[in-house]
Picture 1 (cartoon, rainbow, N blue to C red):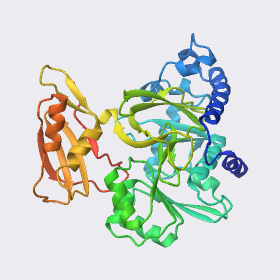
Picture 2 (picture 1 turned 30 degrees about the horizontal axis):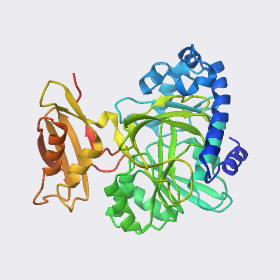
Picture 3 (picture 1 turned 120 degrees about the vertical axis):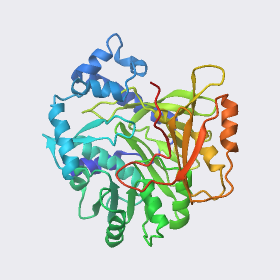
Amino acid sequence: MSKLSTILRYVMTPKKFKSRKHIEKVQRAGMKKHVRFIRRNSPFYARHWDGFTDEQWAEFPLIDKSIMMENLGDLLTVRLDVEQATKLAKKAEQSRDFSSKIGPYSIGFSSGTSGSRGMHFVSEKEQASWAGFMLSRGLDDSILSRQKIGLILRANSNTFESIGSKRIKFCFYDLMRPLEEIHQMILGDELDILIGPPSVLRYLADVKSPLKVNKLVSAAEVLDEIDRKHIEEHFGQIVHQFYSSTEGEIAATCELGTLHLNEGIMVVQKDWVDKEKGWYHPILSDFKRSTQPIIRYRLNDILVASKQPCKCGDARESIDSIMGRQDDMFLLKKRDGDDYEQIVPDFIRRAVMQMHPEITAYRAIQRSADEIEVQLLPKDLEPLSLEGFHFVWRQKNVETPKITLTNYEHKPSATKLRRIQREFTLS
């Protein structure tokens, strides 16, 4: 993979956009060229867009993970053996050797926390470009300065080894290892930047780690406010974020810690959940991703749009938070019928935090139609208030479920932390 491509992408990626007009110009030009290429090379999209002109891309039919996986072979713009790729990806996860490729194409799985696993295919050219983009968004210093970057990941990628150099070195820490071992390795490597799941960064804060780095970046899981405060208090610095998924690099923080959408590489349309509150599902159209195109892809995540522009001056839209996923909306029976009311994760989060002022960690899991399990740290908090929950039940006019209190169980690992989770499904 060409390091020159990485450097060029780094140089060409703006640190900030000064106007919406500039952003929209970049997006129009990017989508115009990209849609033409995809229609010619992806049999699935050619069928999916039948009856639409290239200029109507903003109105193309939506896709989601299930549609993508059902049509993966035809969705790709190159002809690859998806069955062989699946076997290679599974073998890599078992052996922890992630160097396997099909020709110049790397293969990977998503974590599958939503119940279904996604696959992603990336070419060497795309990897080089992606690396330059992420370095531009993540490095505070020049790409020519010496940097040692630590990555705590569920699965390594050959991308990082490929773009490493004498000046930029990547250190990979496998989440399958014991946390105590990972901690000691990190301390020994004397990192400049550490990127990892917030549950692991929280663990480092909990054990009073003496770690000193120039920048902490949360990735791979949703950064909950309770964890952000705890981590920042211990390390005395802003916790930055990369908001990404199998479907792309969606947002990254500016120097003030505000998440800005990566609108220089994708268009993010809004499927509103509640426009007044600023809640929406993002619809992604990535005009830089060619092997496995993501066009009009609706994510289950619910984002909260910022009501004010960020003081950093970047014109890219910002988001206040990642509220959670559609899959994790609680479903409770309505009082006046047999239907179910959806309760967004933010309401559950607020109700939990009202239980006691000294809560430092929690999980809320809907186990059934009428039972919610709440796990709290520290143990044995007294007295606990359920008024926050009762307020939600009254406002939503739903039947009151049983709240069961249990010990907090999550330990950071290769399994993603989901503080709000629904295991109950409608039959």
